[in-house]
Image 1 (cartoon, rainbow, N blue to C red):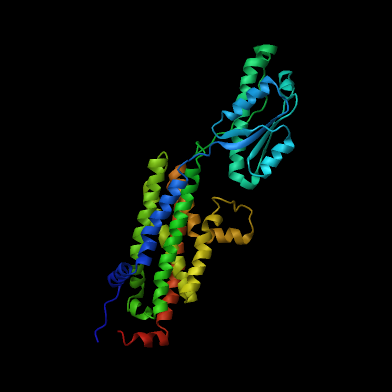
Image 2 (cartoon, rainbow, N blue to C red):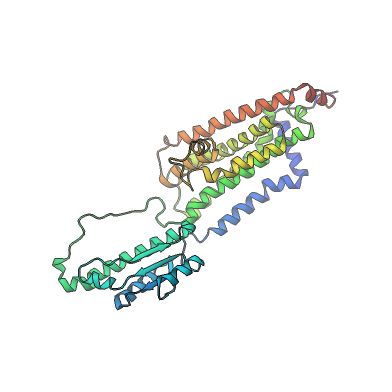
Length: 391
């Protein structure tokens, strides 16, 4: 009986035929990625957090404290939704999540300031909702700073004379770099999109490899050129997801952001490398476990948790040893470094050789071990004997 063709092209055609015949697998690599990307883009389209509800307790009850309240409420980031009579009432609203921050103006706070003393305004925010609370705290601090400048110019300067006003001996000037608008869209979407896409790609690749084990077609599929067959099976997935990733970068850079600060070419090169590395991890799990269900579970536990361990959302500096090692083993970690360097910071291209090289190393090591174990499984006597009649 004539041996069926094998190699890259035969494997590619075989996988495309499977996708045409299996709407579930086809939807996983076509419809689902678009739905995830569109949903995330819509959810974060607001860019900047606005009108966070806060409470203000005014125990000073003066014209200046009421001016301070109006200044805070005029900030785009917060909105004073209640002015309880006591701090205890405000804390009750904070605990019930009616507000996310409380501003307390103590009795005689503005009078002390006008007399040359130090009037302290207290700001309390809910750190359980860290992002929302910190956003409210920053806007409150900005509003109080604006009020201070107005108070110095219009009231204290008139009382003591402009010549007696003195600046503080030491001041801090804090400037925001690389995301001056403090856009949560430009902070979160560049992390979420590649995380979701790499997970979908790894599941699709793991399913494609595991299917051959499950159906007993492993030896017949790999044939005499197993590495070419592996590459052919992966090709449609890598092409599709690299396209999705590139479109995500272009959307964030040119439609929602200020362009690419560094090299667009390196960002585009990072797309296939990220998805090849994610597929290599899936191949590693399939080759080592030789079980489709176990391999897909391992993909979910590793690639699925990559965003939390990438160091971009939660810090890994001085974290436990396991966290730091796990961070280094994830393809998303290296890609996010590349993306931050080239899309937002504008680093020299030589700086990004390290994350690019890390992704390439993951492809070689994880893919090499996984492919070797999968080929060894195909050449096991029982598997080879089962595949012999089909050949």
